Length: 340
Image (cartoon, rainbow, N blue to C red; front, side):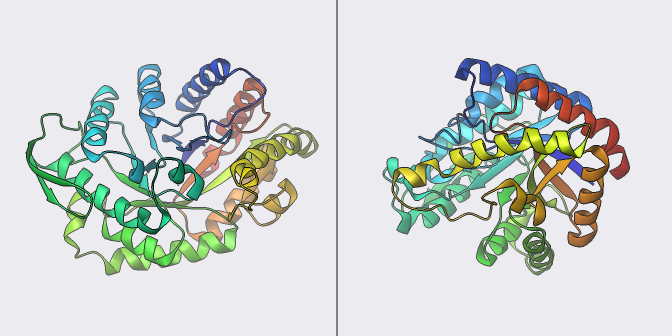
């Protein structure tokens, strides 16, 4: 069982400059505490995400850390020119000493990709084609490709990633076709939502992983046994009462940021995330409480789902830097050892 850190870099009460600096300090603390990886989201034109260029922020993280692995979860591939992205991936992997975890996806918000002129009807095919090009570009000496959107002929791939043949692939999974696609490409998989949903996803993904074992794309998989897990918001304090009192306003602020762009367009977000803290804790999507409470909740979810990886979002909403650092400290000292 391993633990990672997740981050939206959602706007809070501090200046954006302070937010970035606080996050870098939090990631350094997570590294010292023994977290395996730091994963960050990519969002655009919304207070949910002030990290619209993961490569820029991760380059800073790479210089502040030495062991924690890092990567986007996910790069929104339809928004990138594949040649440019291949070069950025290679730079980040080299600058971090081979610590890049390469999360890829198509994006869930039609408004965000729409701002860039990407149509929902061809978003998925563009994602698939871009991923195909990225894998070729990372693993071949010369890039050749003819597709619906792009054509490349004999392009020299001068930059190479530090990891061979390429950094590990990750996907945020939901639908069954998406999980089959991820399994075919040898991706590590992370889901969202209630415990029951995660249990179903992991069972399906485990079967899909075996079913797709013979696919040629598996040649680029980083492991024979993928990480299969979930993303959870978490907050740990000395007592349950303190944890709830401090977490409720933070969660409310974060869910408001999550829904902001949808409200802006007069619609409602289609999300597997709980609308309030009580619902999230009740269905297993959020962990809040004392170390004993959170430890028990995680143990129950691990036993129920069979997950082998848990990505935890400690910094969100109105939480201060000190609150997040205290929460990470309590988690590392009193919860993580139980799952070693």
